[in-house]
Length: 94
Image 1 (cartoon, one colour):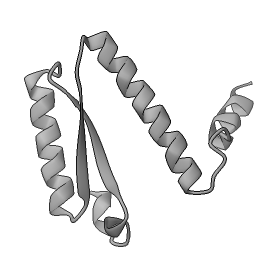
Image 2 (image 1 turned 90 degrees about the horizontal axis):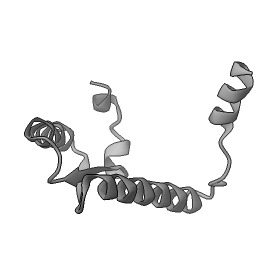
Image 3 (image 1 turned 120 degrees about the vertical axis):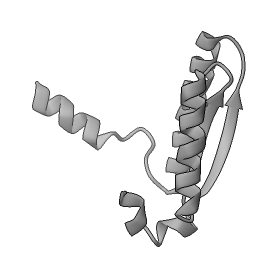
Image 4 (image 1 turned 135 degrees about the vertical axis):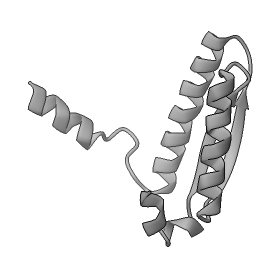
C-alpha cells in the first residue's frame, strides 16, 4: 500500500525479482501477482533467473545480491562497508 505515495521513486526505482524454477508453484504465482501490482503502480521490474541445485541457487542469489548492494553503494557514493544500523543494533543488544 505504501508504494502509492512514492511518485518520484517511480522514475528511478526498478524492482529486481530473483527467480528460480525450484520455487514452489504457489511462490511463482505470488511473484507474478506481486510484479503486476508493482508495474500497475508505474514501477519498472526486472527478473534474474537462477539455475542449478537448490543449495547452489541460494549461494548464487546471496552472491549476486551482495555484489549488487556493493555496486549500488559505490554508485551512490556511499561507503559499502559502513553498517550504522547494524552497529546500532549490536550496541543496543550488548
